[in-house]
Length: 378
Image (cartoon, rainbow, N blue to C red):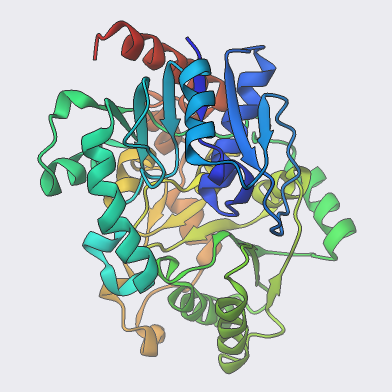
């Protein structure tokens, strides 16, 4: 097997997809799987992610499609596009696999930019046809594909995403000391780590926190946004909304977090909160989950499938966000403790063990899948 991993999200994607794919590549290198490579064009573009990928071929940006195809045909038996089908080719003498995580424009077109929506409708339907096999991150995404496209369900393989196994429960008192020393955070706080876009409903999250902070006056909200080159306008809008809600002294935005920072934030927060209206690949909520972090989540199908009854599900569609005092949040920490009884965790462990979401487990399943694809068993 000679595997080509389409490298665009690896090098240039700042969100969940880039984070996930970099973990996949790192794990392939950790297990000394040498029969894979990526191609990186020498593009003059800002990139915050220094490549640690030893299995890359760097080519001049002027190289033609023909010269790239020549490399692919000589070195590739399986071409895997992790880029939601956006970069799967319609050419080449190799097997083609597309990973599909999101059909957001179909379900919430008003939440995506026109440019993205246009590209989605041009590329994803073709990718589903041109791919020999399709990987999805959940049964719910698989079902969405089958509902909207005429695709043989035997062509689709569900493999749950994986995250770095560094994320784990550690001593909470140690984590609190770490967070206090590095960020001067002392006391109870809620945590949001994730992408900065409209499907995350961050304004609604801030309105919910506004009410929580009136009940627990010493609580704060820590936010860390996945930065990409197009996020500055959205970031300015969120900062203005924080000021409008008079939360500027209660919301702290942290930048440039490393893996140790995130581990200790997950382990010391009162709860991780994510009120997304749509998801198909949320790496941060899985990191929080592996840390046994308390989680407040929106009751979307994807979260119910991967997290089952672990989180406290908050349906903000049933709440008047302009009069939150009618909603019972009288003791957030007591309420969360009540929701997260030990038996809830063990009920989950009985049929969906935590290790299922480790990157080691995920990559092992990917390699097994590739072998089946190459043998024509799928």
